[in-house]
Image (cartoon, rainbow, N blue to C red; front, top):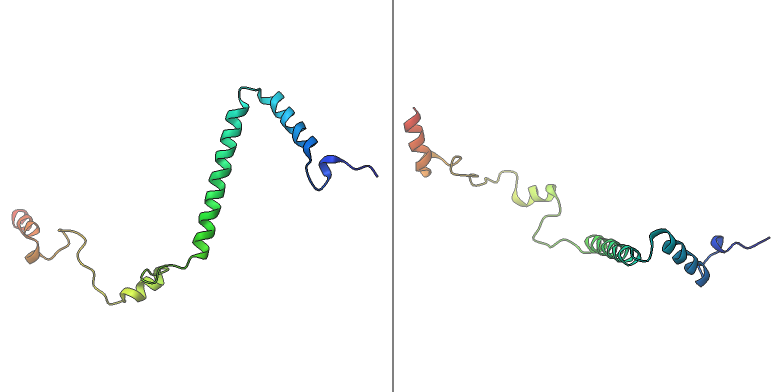
Length: 106
């Protein structure tokens, strides 16, 4: 049985040279450095994303921050009252602008 180089278990120097020669013929000598640079940047971005993803899964969340929405509800409590979102949501005695606008409109 004949052994084929590309179907073997590893790539040798001859295969790498053949791949570089084909790339040189396809893209030309002027474009090869920019292609190699963009390939290197893409590989580095992929590695960075993989590291961040691994770190996110292996690092536990800080103890003072709830991990999800159900924990946040338990942390705050179901009967907790939140302050008004803005001046228009505040009661009239605490919000003179809303009181003046009600007087003018009605």
